[in-house]
Image 1: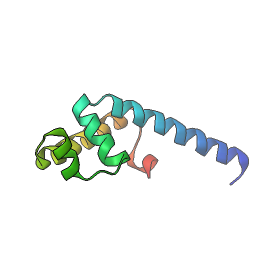
Image 2 (image 1 turned 180 degrees about the vertical axis):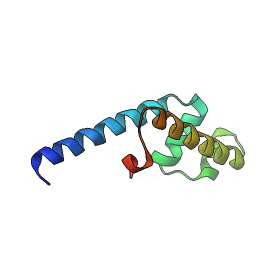
Image 3 (image 1 turned 45 degrees about the vertical axis):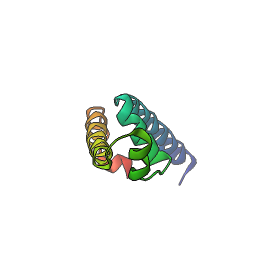
Length: 85
């Protein structure tokens, strides 16, 4: 890629990262903790559930609903699935 194209891609990636951080920050505290532990720390749902005193099904439900909320927030801000891939 040409330097200008690389710069544009880098700026787009940073903007997407910032929007994603803001969307994750908007989750309720418990869902945000589950989300960060699962997606960033790569912890298993069983460990998260045990550590937080929750049922594993609750953790999975929180992950599902969190993903849906993030998708909705990002779509409202003009981010599509193609932007993320």
